[in-house]
Image (cartoon, rainbow, N blue to C red; front, side):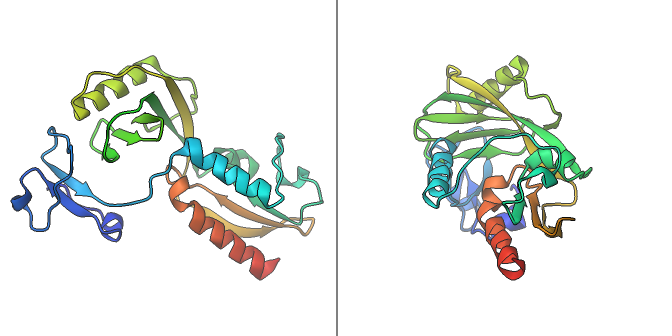
Length: 232
C-alpha cells in the first residue's frame, strides 16, 4: 500500500484499494484509474484559479485597494505614503530581499478541454502527474525542476499529455494552451517575519511557499495581520 503522509492523515485521508476488502476502511473511488492498484484520498478545497484570482482582486478593490504595476530594486523605493510593506515577491524576493535560500522550481502545465473527472488525481511517483478538473477546462501536469526558464517546452508538453492520458485511460486531448511558472521554493521553509527598515517603516516578509502558495495563503495572511496588529 502507498503510505499516507502525516499531513494527509491529519486531513482525514483514507486508503484506496482496487479490492475494497483488501484494506480495512478503504474507499471505493468512482473512476479510480485502473492503472493504480492503491492510493489514498481526502477531501480538500479545490481552487479554480481562473475564477478565484478575479474573486480576490474584486475583494481587494471593494475594500478600497488599488493595484499598480512597477519594477523596484529595493523595498525602500516604495513611496513613504505606506507605513507597512508586505513582501510577497515570490521568487523575486531572492533579489529584493537578498535571500540566497530561494530557488526557482519550474513548473509546466498543459490546459486541455474539460474532462468528465469526478475528482483531481495526483501521482507523485516519477514522472510527476496530475489532472485537475476546473469549471471550463482541465489542468494536466506537470514538471518540477530547478530552472529559471519560463519558455514552454514542446518535449514537456508531449510528455505531460501522454502520461496524463495514459493514467486516465483516454485518447490524448487537444492542447488549449501551455503555461510555465516558477515556484518560489525556500530551502529552510517559508519566511514570515517582521523587519524594521532604516526609515522606520515596517516590512513583513511573506514568501518562500514553493508549490503550496494557495494552500498556505489564508493562514499566512492571518499571521501577517496579527504581526501588523501587534506592532503597527
